[in-house]
Figure 1 (cartoon, each protein chain N blue to C red):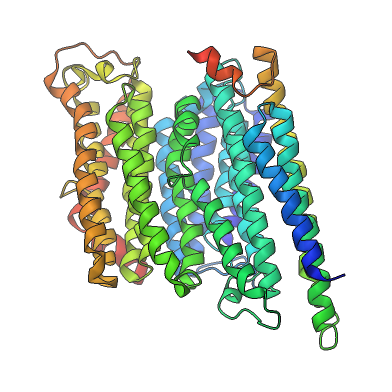
Figure 2 (tube, helix red, strand yellow; figure 1 turned 135 degrees about the horizontal axis):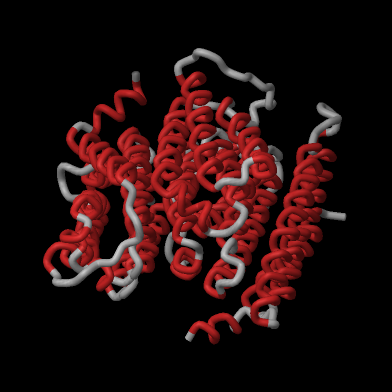
Length: 461
Length: 109
C-alpha cells in the first residue's frame, strides 16, 4: 500500500514545488530525490519494515508478485528520470507538472499491480492513462504532438467505454466486482451463461487496446511517434508493462481458459501482433517510429505470459518487464541525444560517441534477444512456459522464434549504421554523468542476462 | 419490467456510441459518442444493481449496492476525462482552426 500512497502524495508535492523552485535542474533533482523516497518507501513495505495499512475492503490485495513488479517499475522510472530528466524539463515551461503527472501515472501503475476488484482495475487504468493524455500533448505548438494527444485520448476513452461495458456485463452475471467472482457465476437465470463470456470478451478487447495487441494496435505508431520522445519512452515501457500486469491478474484466476475458444483466440492475437509489429518495423526510416513498431512486436512476446499463466510465465513477465523497460529507456535516452532521428542520423556514431554507441548496442541486442543479455532470458522464459503448458504449442514457439529473427534485422540496422557506415553522427551535448549512467544500465542488462536468477531470487526470497 | 429490456436498451445505446466513434470525423461528436457509451454502461449497472437487489433482498438488504456505487465512480472519471479531452480539442483548434480528426493527417503530408 506504501507505493500507492507515496506516489500520490509525492505527485502533489512535486506539482506544488513548481511554485517555489524555478530552476530546471532543481526540479529534475527534486524529482530524482522524490523517486528515491518512493523507492525507499516501497522497499520498506517489501521487506516488512514499515507499512501504511488501509482497510480497502479487499479491493486491493498486495501480493509478492505485484510488489516485485512495483520494485522493477519504480527502479526503471528512477533510471528514466536520471537519464532523461533533463529532457523532461526541456519539453515546455511546466517541468514540475510533467514530473507530477509521471508520479500520478505511477500511482495508477501501482494500483494496477494490486487490484482485486474491477472497480480498482477501472480506476487504475484511468489514473494511469489520463496523465499520459496530457503528457502526449505537452508540445502544444507541434501538430504531430496535437494529433497524437487527440488520437490517444479518443482511443483511450473509447477502450475505457468498452472496458466498462465488460465490467457491467460481468457484474450482471456474477453480482460482484471481485475478480474471483468469475470462477463461480450464479446460475439462477439462463441468460447469465452469455453475459459472463461476453463481459470477459469486452474486458479482453479493452485491455488489448491498452497494451496495443493486434488488431487493436493501429493507434500506437502515431501516438508514440507524435508524442515528445521523453514521454514516448515512459509510455512504451512502464505503462505498457503495467497494462500486462493488469492483464495477467485477470488471467491468473483462470476465468479465461474455461472455454475452448480462448485457446484459439489468444494464439491468433499473438501471431497477429508479432506479424504486425515486426513486418512494419522493417520498413521504417525513423528510429523512433521503428521503436514504436518494435514495442508492438515485444508486446506479442509479452502476450505469451497470458497464454501460459504458470510460474514460467509469471517469472518471465517480470524479467521481460525489467529487460524491456531498461533497454528501451536506454535506447530512447540515446535517441534524444541525436539531432537526426533517422537511421542515417546514426551513421558513424561509434567514432564520435563510442560510449553511447557501445551502450546502445547492448540495449539493441537485449531487445533482439541475443544471449548474454537480459532480453534473451526474458524471451526464453516466455517460450519455455508455452512449451511447458502443452507441447502442442510448438508451432506457436516456432513462429515466435522466426519473428524474433526478423526483429534482429531492424535492430541490427541501427548497429550497422553506428559502426560500419561512414558518417558524422551529430549529437547534442553529452555529459560525463550521462555516459556513466548508460554504462551502469548496460551493465545491469548484461548482469541479468548472465544470471537471471539474481533477479528472480529476490522474488522468491 | 424484465431485465432483458434494460439490457437491450443499454446495448443499443452502446452500439450507437461505438458506431458514432467509428463513423464520425468531428472530434466533438466522437467525444459525445464516447459519453453515450459510458452512460449506457451507467444505465446497465443501475438496472443490474436493482435486479441483484430484488433477487437477494431477503437475505441481504444491501445486495446490489456496489453497482450503484460504481456508477458514481464512472461519473467522476468521465468528468475528469472531459476536462482533459476538451483541453486537447481546444489546443488542436487553436493550431489548425478545425476539429476534424482527418485534418491533421492531411496537414502532415
